[in-house]
Amino acid sequence: MSTQLRRPTAARPNPSARTRSAIIDRLSPEDIEMFWDQIATSLPLVEETGAGGADDEVVVTFCWRDDEAEEVLLFANRLSDERHLAETMLERKEGTDLWHASFLMKADWRASYAFLCKHPGEPAPWESEGQVELRAVLHRGYLDPLNSDWCHNRQGIKQSVVSLPDAPLQPWLYRRDDVVAGTVTLETGPDGRDVWLYDPAGAGLNVDLPLVVALDGEIWTDHHSLPTTLDNLIADGHLRHVRCVLPASGGRDKRWEELAGGEGADYIVNQLLPWVRERRAVTAETYVVGQSLGGVTALRAGLTYPEHIHGVASQSASLWLDDLADAVTPEAKTRVHLAHGTQEWVLDELHHDLVDRLRAAGIDVTSAEHNGGHDYAWWRSAVADGLRALLPPE
Image 1 (cartoon, rainbow, N blue to C red):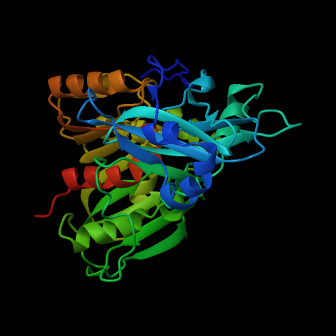
Image 2: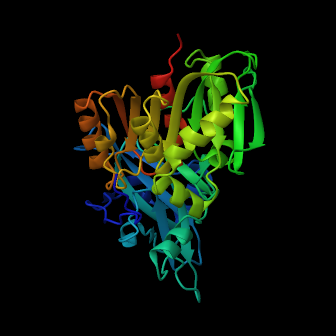
């Protein structure tokens, strides 16, 4: 398989759908205090489209309060385009401290977002010299103080989350008092990196269970809690009892070298699995889950080592790296659950193409589309959908 180590930077094919908010347009300067005190208690604002609007669309308005700012940028995952940031700049309501931007979106949209501000005498933080520097700045914006929902991005920075009325529910994310937690143990893995081992409640350590390999383990044990999701799924009868091993990525450079470079699949099969089997009672039934670079690595593992990997759950796999369909062997029986965000303009067509080609090659594939971007805002719950598809209760 060929490997391309430069992330594609294609511009968004269609501009963000800017529109007007009837609520904002009706406001006068005298109404602003009332707006902040009574209306803007839970942001973003969501309004019906009105006469002539589509039934499955709403107007969503992002608001920021700042009397001194000269410019305010909304950076919303894959709604904003790094090449055309002007499309998501907020405008100021004249004579007020209200900055706002409204968009026409389908009502099932979910995305993380943050704000960046330019104040007098300061350069605009988004005017960075290079793509790497720009991304670092954009990923460190301000939370929306009037939105209580947030998630961590990959860098561990909190970002607000917008979930429109028809966005899928996320019922298994958080710790529940009525669910007994499994145990999570941190150990040093076969190559010296951190590895977390999850054992479910209600199953003894000597009971052989299927094994789930969750890549980017530091994300799923710190920024987000996959063990909590597993506890809730098992308790609700949506998932078989499983054990889970969560290897750390080893940092940005190691992650790119191993996952993008193609070595990650070899590590899983030749190092990690033997190491786990020396320490835990597991069956030969093994599944791999991953996102982005982790998603393409999970797919590589399942398609190139079908005798070891029984199923793969991938979200937003970096399919620009490899032609994975070429890796399918005639004896491959690996089951695949492939999910991506419809706002991911680089990955959308690639995912549709891979689904078709894997099915043509005889692979059992289920697929899902989420109205979102390259984003933990939906990945954090979609991983549960993938596991349910691969490991339903017996």
